[in-house]
Image 1 (cartoon, rainbow, N blue to C red):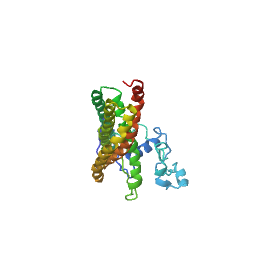
Image 2: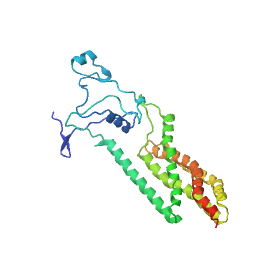
Image 3: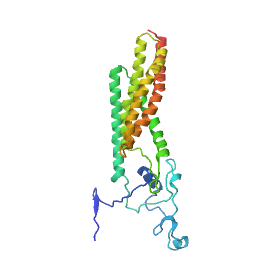
Image 4: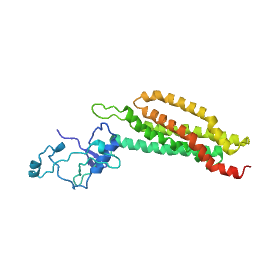
Length: 286
């Protein structure tokens, strides 16, 4: 029976499908691309099979090179990728890994969510700028947002050390998915609230005549309990979502981000505020 001929952009194409077990698609594709050689510049492995099952003597008689054994998955890292099995496309052929399918969708989703995150940050900055009447103070307030990354990325790594249990002999890790990216965007508005509460308390205390240094110290002492309690309610609310197979990434991102940002906000924001405005207040107490 004749095969269906597919074309895209007036060029003939062949779609190749594969499933990745226990690894993110990005890791597998990076390994494959790292092993790729220029077109036609590759040992002749035709007829050889995995693990070098073609005997070396017979392979030499046939003009074939024995297929090398791939590097173990555990030995591959982002700094040293590749499976150690070189390959090349015949002249006139090209391989497009992001052309169709799940990998292209993944790239498009993270690109769009990245743009949405940038737009959300710009919107938060504009609102804070009009609210505070300053261009520098919103930057201090928004320092709590990058602090969430200190918790999210190591948090997913620690989570995989604890809950990763092989399924069918393959690892079953928890990936940083698009829903986790949505959770990171949502954190931008959640953690800024803590900074606003601290700085607003400092401004009120200074307006009542309290020295800047004492106002900064009291802001942390007085506002720690309500900040921790509101963070705790958010954590409990998201704990239930971790049981969902699709939106668990969103919940874990919020949980890890809030845990670290709450702790670091109580330390970083007052210190940065004091470094920027404290000395000026001491020089010009009026």
